[in-house]
Length: 142
Image (tube, rainbow, N blue to C red; front, top):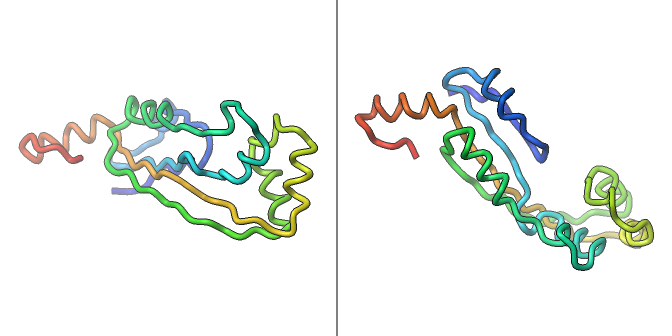
């Protein structure tokens, strides 16, 4: 199999994935898990939907369009210095609607431990999965 589409922390266009994906190609989609950037979420938000992240809908949509072959979890913490904290805030959409005072308080720290909590979904076209299942005498490739 060949990797034909990699999607990291961004919206997915499944129609386009299916159009460009070779028959036996893989789609690898990386999505946040509940503790992704938890320290930033805790600092910027009190009690709204951005405080806690759930990826259930994203996983369901992936499964609706593709056959899920594998799921891997990747979780680690990274110590970021003041400059890195500023870059983090600039790159994440979480800061787009956050209070400027809270953002400033976060980026003016000397450093912070930040959690990266990701789920890696690996899928193929459903038609390919069906063919492979039939080739394996009805055995699932899950």
